[in-house]
Amino acid sequence: MRLMPVSKLHFEDFKPGLFAQYGPRLVTREEIVAFAAEFDPQPMHLDEDAARDTMLGGLSASGWHTCGLMMRMMCDGFLLGSSSMGANAIEEVRWLKPVRPGDALTLRVTVLETRASKTRPEMGFVTALMEMFNQTGACVMSLQAPLIFGTRRGAAA
Amino acid sequence: MRLMPVSKLHFEDFKPGLFAQYGPRLVTREEIVAFAAEFDPQPMHLDEDAARDTMLGGLSASGWHTCGLMMRMMCDGFLLGSSSMGANAIEEVRWLKPVRPGDALTLRVTVLETRASKTRPEMGFVTALMEMFNQTGACVMSLQAPLIFGTRRGAAA
Image (cartoon, rainbow over all chains, first blue to last red; front, side, top):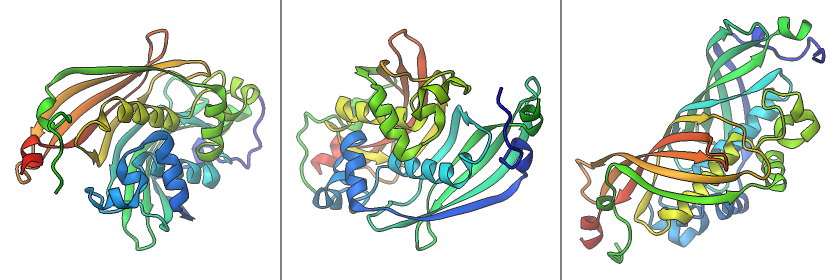
């Protein structure tokens, strides 16, 4: 195992409470349509005219696209500078408001709980709440994830 | 409201039980890396050498990429030929096994429950379990979603 520099974010650095906020990230019409064309080609994500007649009332990003944008903000914000080992579950994804072309999204990360692994001292679990807000302050998406991080103790071993 | 042809899949067509199976969908190394570069640039999704030292033990698709692939299979499989109105929540996403370059994924859709809207006769809710399997028959991902569909009664109104 390679030694990790101690300046990296490890399991021990996470405490319950507001962790950080990232963004804003501008969302363009072009990327909404490109994502939808590949992964979610429903009218409300592809075409302004068709979208007007849908429940969303206008062109909106696929909810999975919003998940992808959130993941990228998590990576750039803190995961890539951490001992993150990944996650194997996501809970309670809520798509609360449409994400529109031109929206500027902010990600708020709140640590709900931390738990050291009972069996593997080199890792621990950080249950985090991720909330995405648009430029009006409305929460457009929330979800929870049990993130897995390496411990500083494990890195030094 | 436009009339929908009655051959379209509506809320009334969903009954609890196995609904359908779609695929296989081949997953290439190129698309795994392309998705990761845009949305989830962690070493285990980008680079074979770096991935070998991670918990996943080799290059693997971002879990969000697997969600996107599932969504596309759902669209092509039944959503685009239906009165689908979308979904506003996802429950219990489980990434159970790594998705590797060259995997051929199959999607199995099971209807868990259907519920007519009490307040809006034009729509109903279909709680579905989506399971993605690889070519060895291993379940690589599962999740549940309360899908919203227009009713035939609503389409005729």
